[in-house]
Structure formats: C-alpha cells, structure tokens
Length: 208
Image (tube, rainbow, N blue to C red; front, side):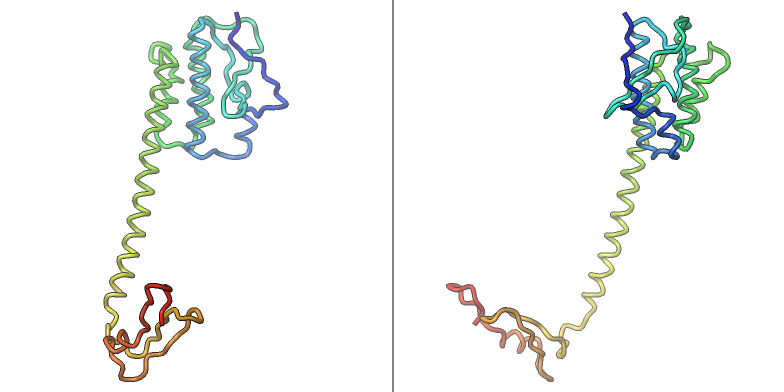
C-alpha cells in the first residue's frame, strides 16, 4: 500500500514556489526542513522509498508538509538515495542558515558509507539546529531587554539628580472641577507646597 497522499497542487504551494519569493526566515526554513524530513521518515518506516525527492515534490498544505508521489514507478530500494536527494533540498532551503552546512554535507557525501544512514539521524541534527536557533533568539531578546534596562536606569538616575527644592515647577492636583495646574509661587519650599495641597475627603474621594 502506498503511503503517499494525493495532493491537489492548485490548493498547495510547492517549496520551490515558496523559495522563488526569496530566502525564508531561519526559523521558518528549519521548520519546513524538519516537517519534510519527518514526512520522508514515514515513507521509509513503511518500507518504501520516494525516489525523486526535491523542492518541487514537497508541498505546503496548511500547517503541514506533504510529498508528491515520485514520477517514476521504478524507485530505488536504498533509502540513502532519498537522503542524498534530500540533502539537495536542504542545500536550497537552508542556504542562509548558520550551521546547516554540516547537515547538508553529510547528506550529500559521495560515498554512501559516509552518508547519513537514516533520515532519523538528519531529523535529530535538524532538531538540534532548531534548538540552537531558539537559544540564539532568546539571547538576542535578552540583550535587547538589557539595553532597555540600561536606558531606564539612566533615566531614573537623571531624575534622581534633579533638585528636590525646585520652586518653579508646576504641579497638578485633582479638585472638584477635575485636574488643574498650579504654579509654585517664588520662594515656596517643597514642604510648603505639600502643605498647601488640598486634602482628600475619604467620603467623597475628592480633594477639597
């Protein structure tokens, strides 16, 4: 029984068509690479091979990946042939992804004995690369937060350095008519300013 799913190509986008629009973001490229590898693993687990895996044979169907059936019925029996072809897919998909060259190289090794012997090995390497990318994103986010914290600390320090007896800075207080501004008269100290502020009526919650 074939484990390939029939795909309506007019409702799906092939990986080739997606890449024609430009390089994908690292996280997106790795996501599609992992989904495609897992789809290929399903074929191998079923005791079959694909035979012509390529960016044109991989379709994006909603949140998942599907593989179009091979055009030729005479498929190779060695799964390492699929792994070699999948290395070509990764070379296109992960061209701009740091650290992907090692995975691609092991898939495209000319000597079958030096090639990855199972697609599961490729999946493990892709998952490690995804983990590294997520850690990199976390470090980048942490660096941005640290920069923001430094900026905020600088603002706080500048506020702390402002004179506390500034006699000319206006302040506002809520009254019956809403919010209003009152300019501190010349010579008024901070303590005097606080003393002349209206008191809060606990019953009405209005400053009077």
